[in-house]
Length: 108
Image 1 (cartoon, rainbow, N blue to C red):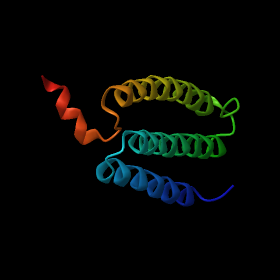
Image 2: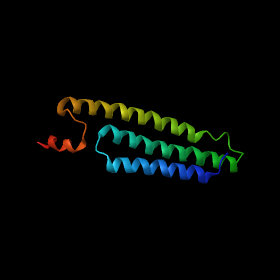
Image 3: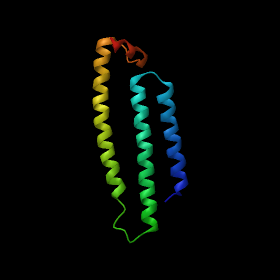
């Protein structure tokens, strides 16, 4: 198993890319993809820390608790993407754009 610092650095890079994409981009689909990238970087850290904790304490059962939690996080994220993409499709049908700067038209 690789040292935990590799996982932390890789997860930090993924999270930074996702945060930069959310902050800079104006396309709603790209923003959703960047949010998913950030969620997956957190999932990677969760599994890495769980495995590290299991390696230090071998009397634990099997070290898959975090993997089960990550599975549920991925299911919720998939449901969030399904709802988000349906909202984006309805928005595109109404405004013919997925630019989030156009959303201020919905105020009135």
